[in-house]
Structures are given as structure tokens and as C-alpha cells.
Image 1: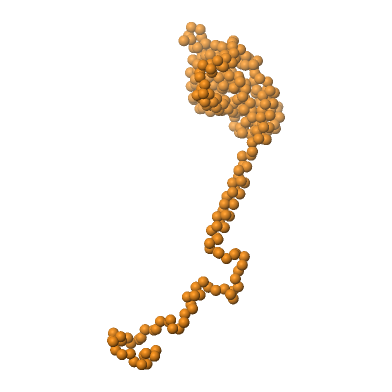
Image 2: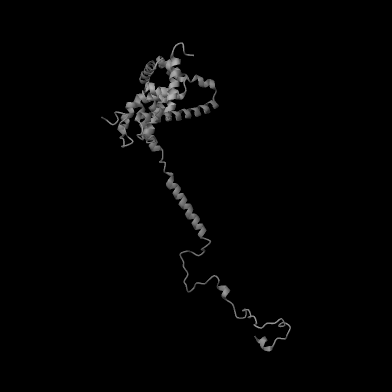
Length: 124
Length: 187
């Protein structure tokens, strides 16, 4: 069987198919109605982007607030005056003269603890 | 000359195509696309209609876009081929689920529609049966060349295969088909 005869076989099949083909209008009307349903029912593919962004921003704000709370126990709106402000380490500076350690003697000797201390030295 | 009167001059990818212009182009090609959809769906009319409808829907919704690198017909046939492949896969999956819940005997009772469809084209039954015994690639390339009058190069474009592969499928398929359709040579 040559190409021409094969072509004739296919021509006959094509004619047969054309007779049984559904009308273009029938299929097109179905396509149009399916498109309308597709457009009205299907949400846009980017609908989740603003939702995800707002969730992420909310989570970040919440996390930031929770981290700041232990570092600044005072309310952030109230700033103390400079005249009343006290350093947290103020307590360490409140020392009397009695608690001051005595300066080491310049001419100390190993016999200092054995020999009687002079009166003038005692008064110091 | 209208821009859609010839496939080679039609360039909707270059300029924005009007909806009615697209509709006219699809209408003009409809008999051809119907034959191709039938071939891609194993000549099942109901499936071919669904595939054609889904292909048109993909096109007008913009999910399938014409780049203008080939003719409209070649591109449209490619869209139909991919849509048919997806539909066949979907149906195979559904059939597997169906078979797991029902016996095979019940399925055979309902499959008479396909037989009736074949009988309607009784004059071409020998060709249809011979084509069905070929590989899918051979069927497609012969359908595109003999039925739709495409070149082997265009057929390769529709099938997304190389020109060399298309030529091989064409030659082997044609020899096998000629043997099957020649009385006395058929097995």
C-alpha cells in the first residue's frame, strides 16, 4: 500500500469524523459558562499573600513586645527627672569612714604583731 | 488578508488578540481539532469532547499562552495533546479506584458505548483497528501527517519530540500500517 492509498483511507476517516463532530457553538457555549464559573468561584491565586503578610507582621510585633517587657519594667511613656534619678549602684557608694580599710604602714616589720604597739600608733 | 486567515501569518503572541478573533480562529480549526482530540483520546467521543472543551477553556482563560514561535494550529494541537494526556491519567486513576470497589464483570456491561462509536465509522474500521495496534507515537505522527496534512517537522513540534524521532516513528508506523491494511499481508 502506497502513500496515496493510505491518504485515501485517512480522508475517508476524516469525512466520517466531520459528520459526527459536535458543533463548535455547543462546545464554545460550555466553555464560556465554565469560564464564568471558574472566574466567580475560584479566588485569585494571590489572595493568601496579604493574609500571610499580616499574620507574619502580627507575630513579629507580638514577639518584639514580649522581648522588651523584662528589660524595661517601667512604663515606656514615663521618663524620670534627672534630679530625682538614682543610679541602681548608688548603694555601693554609701560607705562611712569607719568602714574604710586602714592604709598599710610604710615601714612594716614581721615583729609588728609581737612588739607592743606605741600609744601614738594605737590612736591612729 | 485577515491575520487569522493563514496559520503562518497569525501572530497573536506579538500583538494582543481580541477575544472574537480568537473565537473565529478556533471555530475555523474546529473540525481539525475535533479529529485530533479523537485521536488523542483513543477515539472515545465523550472524552474527546471534554478534552476539547478543557483545551479551549485553558486558552481563553490564559492558562495556555501562544508564544508565536510556531503556527497556531501546531500550538493548539500541542495544547490538546497535553490536555488529553492529563485527562487519560485522571481517568486511569479513577478507574483504579473504581476497580478496587467493583468487580470487572460489572464494568464490561457498561462499556458498550465505545463499541457503538466504532460501528458508526464502520467504513474506516479497518484503519482504526490497524492504527490502534501501533504505538502511541506512531499513531500520532501518522494522524498528523496523513489526516491533518502536516509536515513531519510540524508533527514533531506538536508531539514535543525531535525531528529524527518523528521521522523514525513515521517510517516504522507507515510500514506497519501498510502491512496491516494490505489483504494477505496482515497477521
